[in-house]
Amino acid sequence: MTVTLQDVSMITALPIEGKPLCMSTDSEGWRHQMEALIGMSPQEPEVEDGGKKDRVPAGATFTWIVANFAHCPEDADDEVIQRYARVYMWYVISRTIFADGTGKNAPWMWLKALTVLDNKFSWGSAALAYLYRQVINC
Image 1: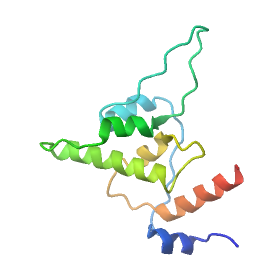
Image 2: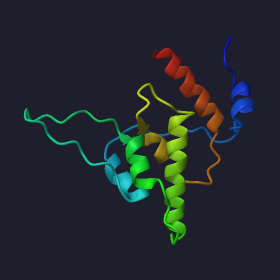
Image 3: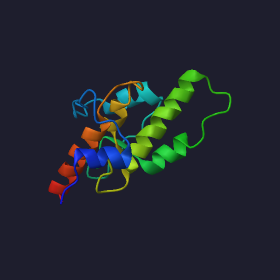
Image 4: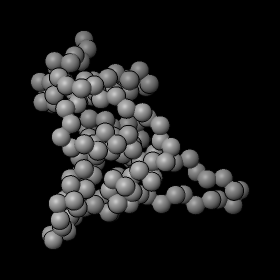
């Protein structure tokens, strides 16, 4: 028994037709790009006594997202509303459809995919491919 593309479409109502969700997973300069998209990024980890930084995944922890984007200001203009909507969608898809094994982080690449809110990506195909990849990596 396996999950098929039709199953994903029926269960999640995600589109399975459209452009493939293909993008670079290169995380070079992700903090700068995140600041351009949502106005801020998580702080870089502090250097320990040994002079080495902790390796941090490219993205933000869910606690950081909630602490900074839990409530959209009532007097927000359209740009701020779109920013909060983008972060909310990033949070939701990183918690559900594209959840990773840690359960703590929202990977940068999914925020990057939401740069164009009216895209015509095949999100269902991407979800199925991600599911298969996560199963193989277990």
